Amino acid sequence: MIYETILKIRGREVPILYYNYRCHVRHYDDPNLRKIMQLHIQVCEEIGNRECLPVEGDLITLAFECKGEEQFFYDWLNEGTMHNGEIHFIYNEVEIADIFRFWDCYCVKIEEYMSVGNAPMMMVAYLSPGIIKRNNLEVREKVWKVSDVSNGNASSIQEENDKNDYISEKSSSSVTIFILSVIHVKPPFKLKRKFQNNPHYEKEMRRQLKMQEDGINKLTVFEWLTNRKTFKEKGRSSSQTAQNDARDAYKRRKMFDYMLLSAENFKYDEITKKVEDGLSSLAALHNPDQIAGGNFDDVTEMGDKRINSSIGSQWGTKDKGRAQNLEDELLKVLEGPPKIDEEQQKYIKMNVIFAEDLEIIK
Image (cartoon, rainbow, N blue to C red; front, side):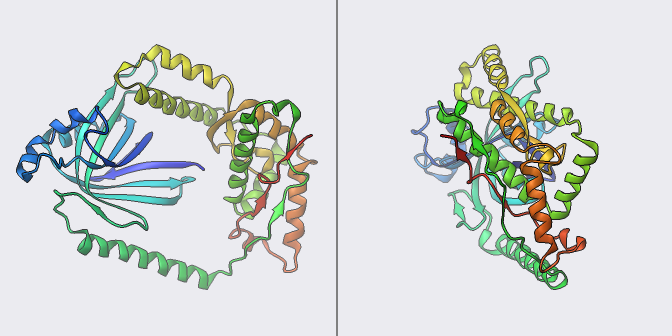
């Protein structure tokens, strides 16, 4: 699945490249946290319990590009102030999958990675919240918290839920919602013999098929048919910019992964080479492929290029093959009974299955 993570704090929205959450962290669990402990000794003394350091408990690590927000985080760290905020996890750019709300939060550590060549400058911030609340989970609190979530903040969350319920009721009363019957793509996709000597390929094939399946099912019937018509009339559209963006985003994520794993011992040139070598075997993925009704600029993931080519070839050509078979089956469903007209198609999501139908050629 494709997620975007955004930190919302003090009127700012900061796109997050790397997110890590650790629960019940104690100072003797991680030697690197000993330095962090020193930042809160004064607070600990005020509380009167040096054995129960405030940073113990939930710790959030966020990495992001430096785009002018750095001073806010330095002030947050150096002034020892507490802030409230939210981390939004957004699926496919529009659907909020989860919201991580926090109150009375300290910034306890900052790391910077200087830019080299075309690589952007990055910042890593370590946050220790006094109170956290995730969707459908109980509130968690630390000893220094000052806010009372059980009153004002909790009621505002309930008001949001009531508002969403009202919108759902209003929508359902004005539009009749249809659920499309499941369509299995025929014939099933096949894992060819040349890929069966390594379990990586079967796993990767299923992963890429599932991403394409999810991508199709995120489209309305109207959107999917429109994309298919455009592809048949104009062919494949150029998506070089989107592909380059996907490769750059993947490179940044992998660079950060290696940097964080190697802590202060990383060598930039070695990490860059390792990431570049890995990219040589990867392709930017359309989810789904354009021939299968995908948008030309929907490129946000990377995957094994050999598997990607195998899937692309198995979709067929614009007029025959699995993509055309899917379109034919869909048109039969739309003819009914009951018949589903074009206006209704704008509110009905696609409902296809093919990832779990993968056949292993014997």
